[in-house]
Length: 442
Ligand code: GAP
Image 1 (tube, rainbow, N blue to C red):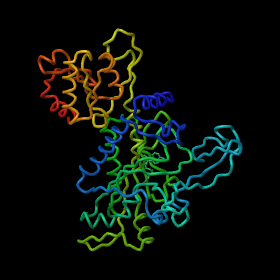
Image 2: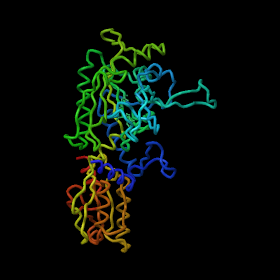
Image 3: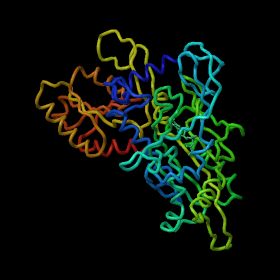
Image 4: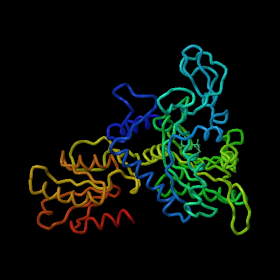
């Protein structure tokens, strides 16, 4: 199964999904860059989450808070104290450092050396703001996006006239000085979160916890993740984050084991009451009808855009033994097919002239490309045999391949090939945009 990860990493680099960061300088500590296809796919994931969590919900609004915040926020949230620290051990021989809870034995996994006693290691990323690098100017890169939501609770409440229960959603970067990053983009020090904070009456918190747990699971299932590779895991009391009363993880069966991709948390009134105490501003809610004043409880859904990306990529990856595009005589080994959900596929259609040495075909193909590109993310490709081009498009999950041939010149129609069924149909150029739209929205 480890082999599958190497194949995914290699495909990701070869086809421009994900590159190691600063690669020409030898890379940089588990940082990654999203390439031309990767950025399209990641944007599609975030767009799908945003639509599901704001547009389709009557009572969830969006926010985009700054990454840098007043350091008092992190004092109040508990992130600067022991709450947000992992147990770190160091090998006395090779000096490699590890997260204690990730170790299976009490010897160094790299050289077998003896390990030190564990000590708490805070994960906040420190930085300096302003021209002077003194303590007064210290701040932190946010470790979770939701703190920007809590400190804006009153602003959103007052400006959007929201009534409890309601939610605030946000997508953005977060940073943690992870001791043991790894497994490609699964655990990195810079990552993106897609978080929604649901403010409700304390008495309704359990009910909404169940609701959001199920709703979030459906999002992955509706986007094609195989049911047998998803599960819930109740987080044990002793494992709970410092802010959580209860937590359930959504886990995916990665080649390296069952691992968390999203957390559903009941944060109680931890955040709003602590920010109230520390800021002096009462982040309470007044129910106009009952006149009850209280700190709402928060049910949080916290997903990682990068972990989702990896999940969707692994879920989509297939090797078809013997090949599926039986258009060349050469003996096929196996072909890669990325069966990514239509909403997430980075390229929706590819326009392919049958041959490139017939100017009239190329001209017509370019016209079709111009027509389509204003509607969908498209590629134009005239290099190599048509079979090889289909194969290249299958490898990146392109939904439709449109071939311009000699009949096109006479009949003004094209061949539309479906990625999954490989069925080909003749479509009039004038109907192409409408038909692709229909298929994308089906
Ligand atoms: N606000 C709650 C919170 O941050 P978390 O369980 O620490 O909860 C939520 O993180 C999600 O953020 C995880 O399920 C994961 O998808 C993503 N995430 C957390 N740390 C990450 C890391 N080091 N690399 C990539 N994604 C990470």
